[in-house]
Image (tube, rainbow, N blue to C red; front, side):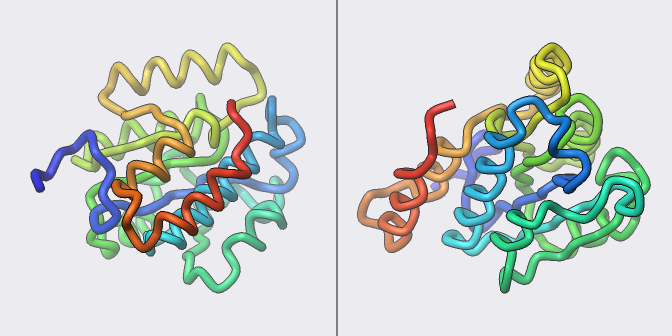
Length: 192
């Protein structure tokens, strides 16, 4: 198999869940959809044994990671790192965790699309990571901010995709051992 930067592969990929915090989520447009997408990506990352990194932006003010997301992360070995910078790359501890993972592909989910997701994705691309953003697992307070940020990321070489597409891409084959557990996840994903 050829290594392609536009194709997710379980041995090269990791999941970054960015700032899905309890006091921020009620303000996010379609926040329930975003939360469900994030939880499904976490469950999928566990099926495919992807490392998971979780960030929190100013938790004293925005609260901790959403309880339903923490529940999905239980026993996953995920690192939760506080970051003062909007971009994950602006915090040395996060940069170190990304590098130590040995992964070259970063699957991104979280909030807000036009702030922390955008800045993280742009910086990750500049650091030679292949970046994939699930449009149905990221969100902003406003639709225009969300859509404009997705467009800008596409222009910068970020692969914008969906949760279901990512899960099938990671699985690749219907005779893979992960197919049945992955299919169980897909069955509960509502179409965006």
